Length: 183
Image (cartoon, rainbow, N blue to C red):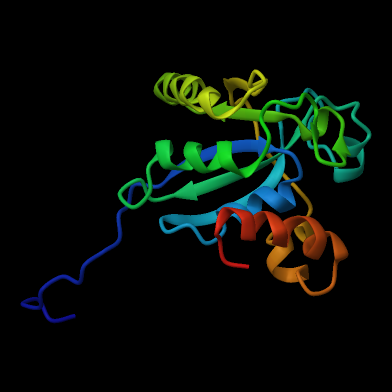
């Protein structure tokens, strides 16, 4: 490199993560996938007691884990508050342990925070979001202790299966359309 050359602009080196569960992680992943500022999304499990659970174990409802997504994002392009706003719109946070036909504790609404500031912001956002719902919001807000990535075939599920899996066509695509997001 020429010592006199101007340095090329670099993207923000500050990457943060947000961890949300709002039912099926395939749906939540698809919702946040194309949001400007989102760098990567990983589907996984958190909020329970079993170490390194499998999808089948989580689906049994006996691990205590919820299906969640962990969003890596550039806070100079999208804020935690903006992610929270989309989270509230992307699912029904008033139904306990269920989203549509998906029922069980693994489908609960949950926000797992990485700092006291995130916890405060999540609580404030929850109170603000309550005005949009007739029933009380039942979303859990608690500190993230550990995140276990789901098996590889769950990653980018909608993008990889939208033309092959009826669930993608019947459940996820209409959700994206309702939210005005790319399908």
